[in-house]
Structures are given as structure tokens and as C-alpha cells.
Length: 231
Picture 1 (cartoon, rainbow, N blue to C red):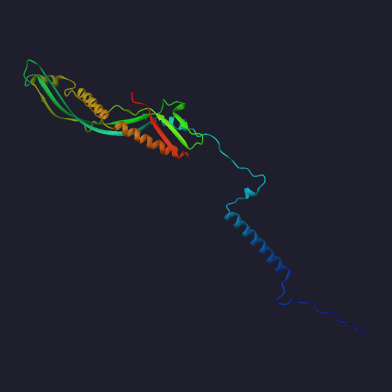
Picture 2 (picture 1 turned 30 degrees about the horizontal axis):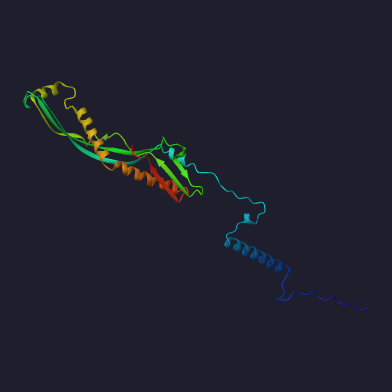
């Protein structure tokens, strides 16, 4: 009996894919499909939470603390005015010549005055918000003036005439130049000049600009600032 040799194993042809090659191409195809799907979702502005049936979203319906934000400012230093006045103070004796008894002093007083709006007295009805929360109205007191701040480095006596008796009195006095009285007069004249200027109106305008920027940043499209009637 003759034996027959078994046929040799088949070798894959050069063009036929192997099982490992088919698995590799399958993984590449799946990765390409996932990448394309991710690009479609990103391009459409979607997130994975959109397709999550248990996803949540937060809606903030709380009211902004407008009045508290304004009250925390306490007061707004809205404008500063710089002033310079000349005080001409003359003193004489009715029955004595000036060379014996009498003084005349020219004093330059320089200083600043701050104008501010006070928020400490605001009540709950000082702020009104529209139902759709796009408009807000704020009612404020009128601007006020601070006490003048005299600058010692820029305030000085540049001319003074004194009689003989006044020279002797100044020599014996602990305050020969009488600067205290001159400073008080200079402050009075500076505050009068500040009240006659537009410093308070400028302070109210600057306060309105500040509040419009502050409340506009909270999302209000229209901000109205009203001031109380002048006393």
C-alpha cells in the first residue's frame, strides 16, 4: 500500500488580509466613527449632559443685593476742588495812628474741599427694579461738602504791617503771627467759594456715572439715578 503525502498548508497570498489585519482595521474604523461623532456634537454646540437622561441644569433666580451693595459704599467721594484765597485782615485803633497801633496782614490760604454722596441713610425703597429686571432706579440725597483741608505747605503770610505796640505785643505773645485767626478766615472763604462753584453738581454727575457702571455690570440695561429735591 502506497502512502500519500498530505498537502502542504496554504500560505496566504500577498493581497489577502490576515485576521489580525482585519481586527486592526475594525478598531481604526470604530475610532474614526467616534471621532466624527464627537466633532458633530462639538460643532452643534452640544454637550454630553444634553444626551444624559439624568442630567441637571441650574437656574439662578435669586435677586441681586443692589441696596446692600450701595450701602456698603457708605459714602462716595465723588469730586475734589482745589482753592486758593487771599485773606486781607486789618485791625486798627480808632484814636491812634497805624504806626502806633494797628496791623494789616495779607495771608494766602490754599486747600481742597471734597464733595461726597452719603449712602448710609438709604432705605429699602431707595432702589426700584422693573418686573423684567432690566431697569433699575436709584434715589439718592444731594451731594455734600466736606470741611476744607488747608494745605500748610502752600498757605503763608506774604505781607504784614504792624504798629509799635503790636510789635511789642507780638514779641511777648506765644503766637506772634496770629495764624489761628487767619486759618479760620481762610477756611471760611474757601468753603464759600466751594458752595458757589459747581463742585456739588460735578460730584452728583460722577456718582451717577459710577452707579451706572456698577449696576450695568449686574445686567441692567437702563439705570436711572435721581437726587432728592434741594432743601
